[in-house]
Amino acid sequence: MIRQLALLLAVLLAVSLFIGDGTLAMPDALILWQVRLPRTLLGALVGGGLGLSGAVLQGALRNPLADPGLLGITGTAGLGAVIAFYWGVSQHFSPALPAAGLLGAGIGAAFLLGFAGRAPSGPSLILAGVAVSAIAASLLALALTLAPNPFALTEITFWLMGGLADRPLWQVAMVAVPILLGCAILLRLGTGIDALSLGEDTALSLGVPVARTLQLAAAGTALAVGAGAAVAGSIGFVGLVVPHLLRPWLGERPGALLPPAPLAGAALLLVADMLVRLAPLALPLSAAPPIGVLTALIGAPFLVVIAHRAAP
Amino acid sequence: MIAVTHKSVSLGGRTVLHDVSFAARDGELVALCGPNGAGKSTLLRALAGLLPGTVPQDPRRVAWLPQGARSAWGLTVGQVATLGRIPHRDRADAAITKALEVCGIVGLRAARVDRISGGEARRAMLARAFATEPDVFLLDEPTADLDPAASHAIMRLLRATADDGRTVVVVLHALDLALRYAHRVVVLAGGRVTADLPAADALPAAAAAFGLQFGPDPEPRLLPPG
Image (tube, rainbow over all chains, first blue to last red; front, side, top):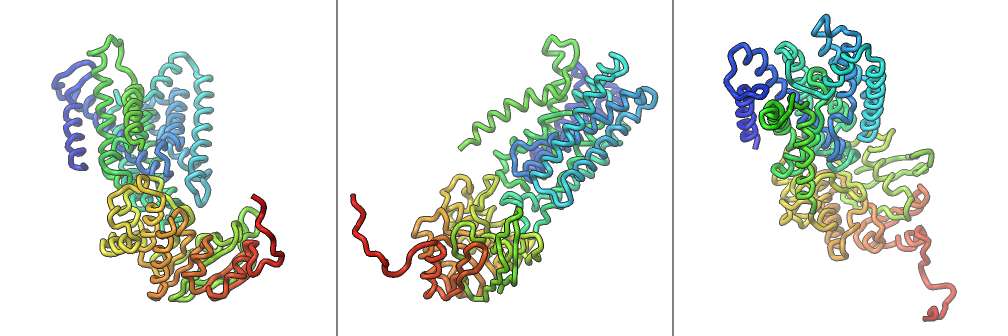
């Protein structure tokens, strides 16, 4: 399964380099290096982080509806970026935007772990995430209300919808480190979330450090998803749907989903991004639709089909 | 061997255990009996080291099975049993297969625990405890959901396990099983140990804890009408 997914991902990575905004052709070197390559790599990194975080969180919280967005880090990363837009810093100094997003993700993660308490349980982590999300959403609304001019408002709104286009290679490199670090943390939690299938007390009785497992799941998600959101905005549904896509093939043991989840997440986001780029060819659209629209439009029907098939 | 001494436990402002001392020796099957809310499960958790203020036990030595244990995901029976090897950090197939065999579910190894009967799922959870190969079993109502034949089979297994030198502490509501298979019956009521007797002598005390009459009826009556 891993090998097939890795092969699929490699093919998608290659194909993605040949697809432009509404064109299908081998690009010249400049476009390849400055446009297609960063976009492709960013899609794979962000999708991988989302897929793996979703698989870990669903396992750790014993909830098939858990999604990385639940922890609120996506919101605080967006808030950080919006503040950079708002003060106009990003127009004068372009690294300010991803840096502010990363800072927002970091502050959000600190609040999340603080709210969850010294020895978090599943419910306390979810409540902390809901609190962080609510604070981020309200501050975001405040920033939008007070936006200095209509242009800034439009720019902020579009950025928040999420996208992989026009991010330079250095921005991709800047977030690759935290995303890969977060994935490395999350990939080590397999045994812990397997034990959590039987409940937190049973996991404790098996010698699993439950509180630390949940804290690492939250911290790893903050790195893997927060860094992605700092550059690509909020992309929903990938983290939710990836574990559901894998379960029919791999069974329901949560730890078994971890190694393939980043590959599947990366592949899913790359497919969605290719469809975004090709949409103007097939449909009478004046511009490419935001990628978040595509992930939800593809993901939601998939989820319904899987849910019906899985029902005993 | 497992013990707590002078243990008091308060949960949510209510005292659940009052100064309870309890010990079970190697080779002993002890049944904990008593009405709902007597503190049986809390005592088992205290023994397992799962309550605040208790010392965590070595997970390789002590296996604990909670009341109504279930899996959040559709793991296979084999995967559930494999979780019992987590304390040893291995997946020793011999131990897992033996656990499935003694619990009588070796044929269900590949079946999902959410697609088998409640009684079979209960045995899968028990197999998880056996796969750990612990010295001490702490089992909360392992025969709930099981039909009489399966209940007796599990109790025979637990008795054999104890006779083999292991320590087995089991919470039971079924008094008949406790009296028939345990070496010793400990009766709890209102968070206190009210009786600690060899199984053969335990019936009057156990019946009293449940508010049941035992012995000749002091007021012989006619059968109720109808």
